[in-house]
Length: 111
Image (cartoon, rainbow, N blue to C red; front, top):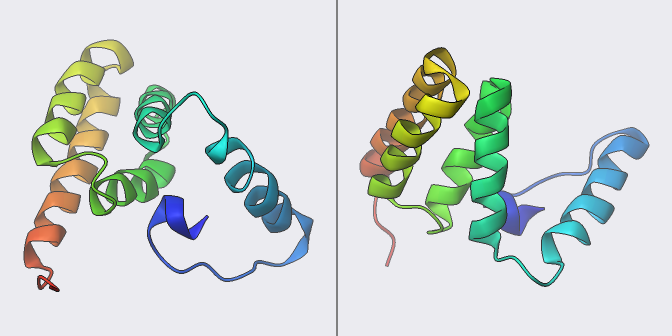
């Protein structure tokens, strides 16, 4: 889960977190046949189509921080998905993308 999201996770309460961490991230995200980038592209498209800005706010920065999608790719995704997911959903995605890019530019480079 930490590898996919790119930040430290702590155990949540109850079984929901355990199932999410153990099944979705340990099993599903590590199946052969698709790269993490492929999975992320599919997920971002699905989330944009559903208008799920809350989860896009996690997935987009994670894809950017993990090097799966750069600034240009994220901006191209916005243009493409806006035509399929609808302009309001595309506008919400664009806000998340531009916020992600701006925050990354403000972050100090660690070498």
